[in-house]
Length: 124
Image (cartoon, rainbow, N blue to C red; front, side, top):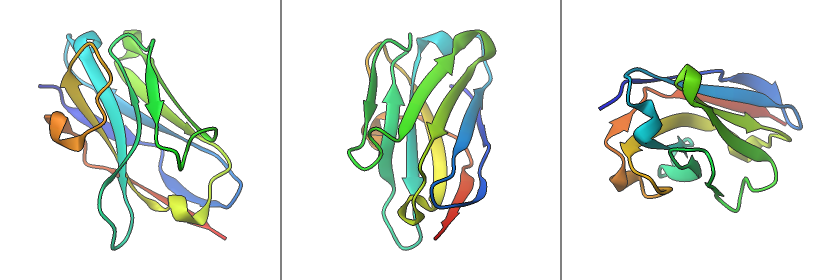
């Protein structure tokens, strides 16, 4: 398994942007698919975006499609989530997750490693 640490969260106004980072330990990072999930206050954890091991395939929740972009830099063992045009409903704790896979994974039950989360708060 890998150890994951998220960063980049914060408080922004609606319409602004943030970039979250998910830094992974371990030398086998390139074999891992990565997913971003979020959990808002009083809500279930939900899928946000995912990327396969090479970065060639990405997948997004409909609610963020066109606003969020997931990418990865395997040389830096880091996955990013660029979030543009943020809305108050994007307020949540954002988690990254990893699992060894060549394909994109979107079900939280498929991931074995999770970070501690980073808070994103969007004010109106």
